[in-house]
Amino acid sequence: QVQLVESGGGLVQPGGSLRLSCAASAFLFSYYGMSWYRQPPGRERELVASISVNGGNTNYADSVKGRFTISRDNAKNTVYLQMNSLKPEDTAMYYCKAIKGGTMYWGQGTQVTVTS
Image (cartoon, rainbow, N blue to C red; front, side, top):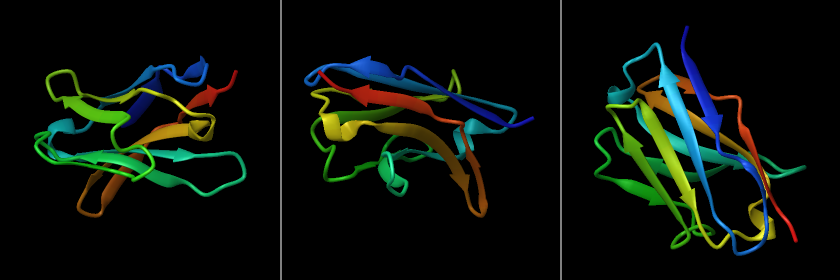
């Protein structure tokens, strides 16, 4: 059974850091592009960052450039999102997505709350 399991979310103060992980199983992880999305309360899901199959290409939403870093470890079937200088507006449910052609998988999400 295909699974994407996010972890690492939590409650953090403004200016703090978190590292999200998304562990994949039951599919060929290294063949899939990976992305992180987030959905703030009452808003639509939005793309945060994406990374190519070999990690050579990354893209970020303007709102997180310079603060977030996406990376992957194909040997561990895991994609990461290092989040620094967190702001209250980063509060959201964060999801990882795997995509290859017309096939995509989503995780269940991990909550990130940034508040003082």
